[in-house]
Amino acid sequence: MKVKKFTAATSRDALRKVREALGPDAVILSNRPVDGVVEILALDNDDVASLAAPVSDSAMAQPAPQLHIDAPAAGGASFVPAFGPTPARRQQDLAPAAAPAPAAPAQTYAERRAPAAEPAVDMNAMSSMMSAAIAQAKESAALDMSGMMNEIRAMRGLMETQLAELSWNATSQREPHKASVLRELLGAGFSATLARYLVEKMPAAKDAAEAMRWVKTVLARNLNTIGNDDALLSNGGVFALVGPTGVGKTTTTAKLAARCVMRHGPDKLALITTDAYRIGGHEQLRIYGKILGVMVHSVKDEADLRIALKELRNKHTVLIDTIGMSQRDHMVAEQVSMLSSSGADVKRLLCLNSTATGETLNEVVRAYQGSGLHGAIMTKMDEATSIGGVLDVVVRQKLNLHYISNGQRVPEDLHLADRALLVDRAFRSRGGAQNVFGDAELPMMMAGAAARATQSREVSRG
Image (cartoon, rainbow, N blue to C red; front, side, top):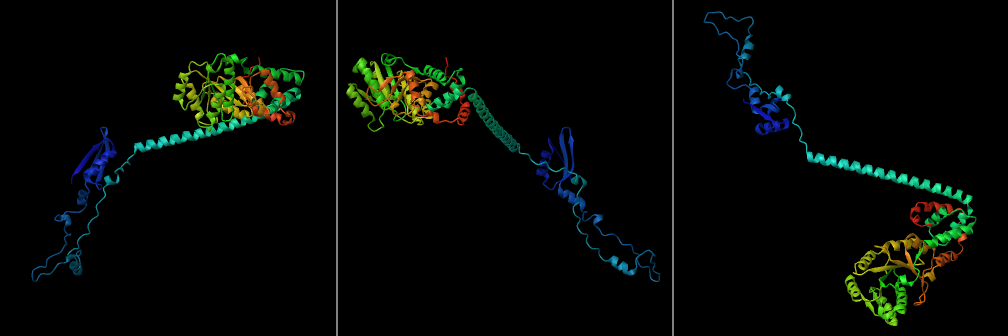
């Protein structure tokens, strides 16, 4: 029998040494800390079994001796002690004793008190679980916060709408001419946002006629127009007409080309077309160029445009007719980039369709804005039942309105923009606006425009 001692920094490491040296059936005799380490005394299981079973040739393994008295000599009387066994019992005692049953290995007290092995802990797995729990808690908190903020915004919007309706009802009762002016603005096609701002900032007036004169004056003052052709034709430069498909870019290019030829002659003008996709697109401009005696150059990409503009740098005016595409087409940004990176100062003129809605025109301006538009041209004015929508976009987007186009004739149907005439035209062509919006609808219109009021605060009243 040999007791072995094992030491380690932790109980787990000491038990591992015991298991490696003596096997999983080793008996732990003691487990205690000594001088900063853990000391374990252990015994092999075979040594424990040898302690429980006696050695075969030892006295403990022999049968117990039986007490008996030998027979006396002849003639002597036998003596049987009173406390001795009877003859039958003696005979039974003299029989060989049965072999003792093997004793089960004894479980020592130290083994019963030995501490259980500590389970191994995977720190990486625990760290991953903690990180996942923290991330899930953050995500849940973010979702809860987002939901709460949405509810707060919804409640705020509802309260603002109700307050705006109450405020407008009180204002319309106190100043009835404001309701009349609001109907005029909405009926002319102006947005509810701009109409609301103008009505709110309107000074006290005696009647609706005086209030309308103030509104027309403010609108005309906020329309940026050029005074004469000198700003465009006399100074010259490179101009590109851009805009969606079917807005009238090619026809407008021909009208501007005719004006340039009449003022400076055909030798001072050059025409470039990038419309190589539309069937017959470049042919239409070539026909106009042939009539005017001006050469038309066709380019396909940015490299061709650079070469063409370099060759035409001595021309007084260069007009570029671009490809028409939807304002939602991703190629709009590529077209703007091509014109901006052409190596020349290309001024972009945006063609706005007067028949389009205000929402559509706002999208068009945002898509073609790029680094900045030089100006705008109103087209198809002869087809529009109301021009308040396009004037609203020009005012709120602060565009420079150069020309208006109201027909197909070249070059007659192209005119300088006159702000006073345009505003007057907007209200004259409203067409029965008094019956479009009732008294019950005006508060809702005003409340809906309250959230977008900041956009129209850029309008100057001075």
